[in-house]
Amino acid sequence: TSSKILLLSQSRDSSVQGDSLTILQAPGYVSFQKGDWPISGEKIPDMVALTMGFSVQEDLSWPGLRAGQLFQRPRANMLVVVRGVDSLALPQNVASYPLENPVPFTLDSVAETVHSLFAEDTPVVLQLAPSEERLYMLGKANAVFEDLPVTLQQIRSRLSQDGSVLASLPLNSLNRNAEADLLFLSEVQVLHDITALLQRHRHLAQDHSPDLYSLELSGLEELGRRYGQDSQQYRDATAILANVLQKFGEDVFGLYGGSAVVEVVTVKSFEAPLTRKSRSILESKQISNPGSPYNLAYKYNFNYAVIFNIVLWLMIILALAVIVISYNLWNMDPGYDSIIYRMTNQKIRLD
Image 1 (cartoon, rainbow, N blue to C red):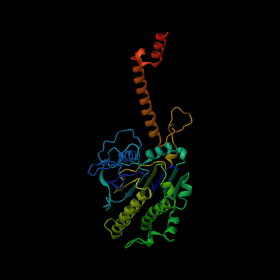
Image 2 (image 1 turned 90 degrees about the vertical axis):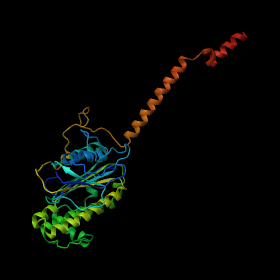
Image 3 (image 1 turned 30 degrees about the vertical axis):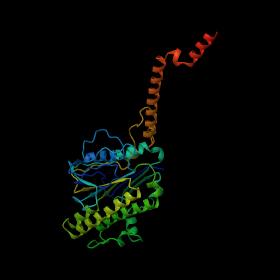
Image 4 (image 1 turned 120 degrees about the vertical axis):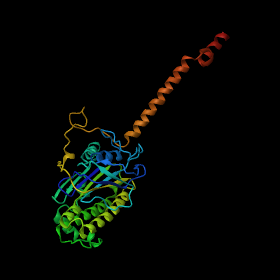
C-alpha cells in the first residue's frame, strides 16, 4: 500500500483565499455542524489536518468541526478551490460556511505531514499546472497518473478523443475553439480523468494510507475576464461546473467506500498573491526526528494507537494484580492460609 498526495494547480499560485467553504461529502464519524460559523482562510489547513487525524500546532477553536472518533479516520481528503466565483449552487452538501479574513493559504503543511509519516510507503506526490505545463510526480504516481493530460496540447488532444467530456456536457454558449473556454473545459476534463484513473486503480483507494488531493481551478476566472461575469458564457460555465463538482464529489466519496471528505472553496479574487515552491513537500528543511542526524522520520502506522492502548491497559492490569497479591501476602496468616505451614504443623503434632 502507499500513501498518495495529489496536488493540482491550474494557475501560477496554489495559495487561495475564498468567500465560502462547502463540505460536499463527509463520513458520519467526521462531524461537521451546520451553521454560519465563519472560518479564517489560514485555518483551513488545520481543519483538513484534523479531519485526517493529524495534530496541529494550535487548537482550532471553530465550532463547525467537532471531535471525531479516535480510531476511525477518513482515507482521503479532497479540497477543490474554484477561483472567480462567490458561490456555486451545490444543494447536496453536508454544510457550508463563510470565510472570514480571506488570506492566502496552502496545504503544504498537511502534505509534508503525510509525506513524512508515510515515507516508507513510497507516497505518491503529484503536482500539475496545465497553464504552465508543469508536472512533478514521485513514487507510484508515475504509473497511476501517467495518462493524465498535462500540457494544454495534450488536453486539447484529449478533448477530441473518445470519452471526452465534450460529448456529455451541454456547452450552450461556450466555444471549444476559444482559449478561455478551452481552459475551463480542460479543467473539467481533468476532474473526469482523475475519477476514471481512480476507478481503474481501485486498490489505491481501498488501502489504509491517507490520501490528500488539492485542486485549484481558474478557468471560471478566465471566462469572467474574457466575457464578463454577466455574460451568458460565464453563467453557463458556472452551472456546468456546479453539476460537475457535485458528481465529482459523489464519485470520489463512493470510490473510497464512504471514507473521504470533499470540500469546495469558492474564491472571488485574490487580494495578495502568495508564491511557494512547487516541490516544497519534497524538500524537507527540518529534521523530523531530532535524535537522528539522517533526517529520518519517526516510524508510524495506523496500528500505533491500537498497540499503545493494548500495552497501556495491560500494564495497568498487571500493576493492579501485583498490588493485590502483595497486599494479600502481607496480611496472610501462615497457620491458616498457607497449606505448607498447615502440613508442617500437622507433622509436628504427629511426631
